[in-house]
Image: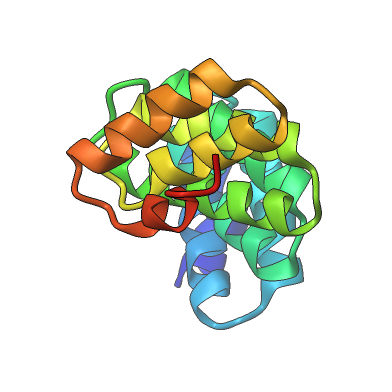
Length: 168
């Protein structure tokens, strides 16, 4: 049905309508696990209507599925630029936290800290964020910041910081 609407589309209808139809097509293709086709549709949406925030969330989902973390981060940042107070910021914070964990596992501590701090700026209630930000600061020898993050983690009653007690 969406494909038929796109076939019937005429330029005089405006690019907004075309972008909305392509967005719906991209969502449908994502659900059908046709990621390459969905990504192509979403890239068209972004070219036609760069202010359509939902397109960046769909692209983020596609890039998360393919493991393209840099593209995923760029998509999320574009979404946040367009929707700074969006209702989905808690979900986006969780995605940034996940990116931070990936960076930490790859021993990119500075990159991980950037993602954890972005996640904290969106939603400081995401479990374990203060702990992991503190861990990054500790590894980067930014001890005062590490203490601040660990203190926040203790206040949130997160127990991961307990592993650092007694280590000096």
